[in-house]
Image 1: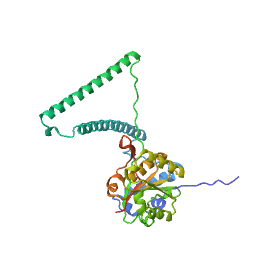
Image 2: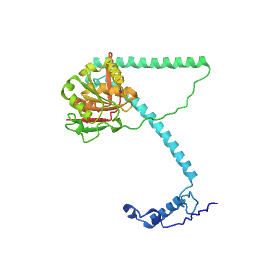
Image 3: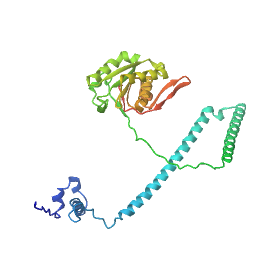
Length: 330
């Protein structure tokens, strides 16, 4: 029969159990209270008074755990309801602003600048638009009522739920002279280290390709990255659905993974095409902009608007997508 080992635990001074307090803790206004708290905590961790697990002593002014949980749950429910109301109010205000913007766009010239004939014509247009709106609303209300009477089952009620997805995204804007010519000499991480084993794609146009692209790509290759260069037409000729489909197929054919990064080196058109492709492949992969024109540095690269043109108009097909970094080489 093996001997029984008995471990006797005694309540010791907190300094013996936890060591000396940190310097900033020693400056506390009430060292005695601080030492008492440390003693209680040591007792809890070592189980000197309440068995192996121990329990933290409850302060005299502290409410029981059940009451605190109930109070916190009520506060959470109230705050959630207020948040839902606030979101609905934001949606209403946003819709009102859009309606107001539409009116302003329709009447670019202020009424004060029009003569009597022009004002009369504008008033007539507004009256007809209002009558048309009222007529449409009545038609929808009448049709809805007729359907409800025909079904006899009454309206279908719904339970309303809402949720938020995603977290705030931060885009770093870095200004570094000479980094385009020699990215391997950058004193900061250009491409995330997590993407070191993933294919990297550099998008540039025909003009920038002849100026910087080869040195730019070779700099990343010296750092050990596997880089593929894709040259697109200059300007708006690259911002078409056909070019987008062709380039997307080319990138997928070469091969990418979720950690791949697309890098744009050029003006606004390159940033738009590269950004839109990055936002759609694998439902979104890494994107870094190196804008080489002043307009791209001030607008296209930092606006998060990635788009291409459609036969019906400019920038009609696109997305809002945040790049990981924007590196400006002035």
